[in-house]
Length: 148
Image (cartoon, helix red, strand yellow):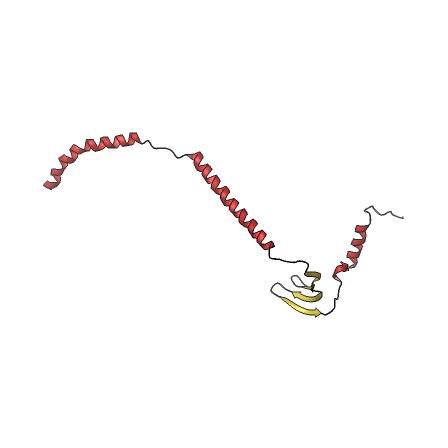
């Protein structure tokens, strides 16, 4: 315990010097508030850069999917008929051959492959409503006269 007390006067003599150095350090380097405008500008530029990268990636993906060489004229859907809420049959023309397929939510199955075309795909729609609509499109849109 005497050894601890012997070092105490030396510490008391050094205290004013340590206190003066701490005060000088505090006066020499004042505490600065963060630059709010600079921080907001930095965050804004970062946000714009991230959004630009996302749009750039989306553009590249769209361009790459177009380069797959998909030829839409090779496969034509000639006719589709709904059999239920989620089931359909479709007549598809591929390479001059028509194929009847059954479509369900989980599978697509070939029902019949026709050697010669069943329906002419170039003739257009073949229903009564479709024929009437085609006829109306060709005519003028004046109201019909009534013969009462």
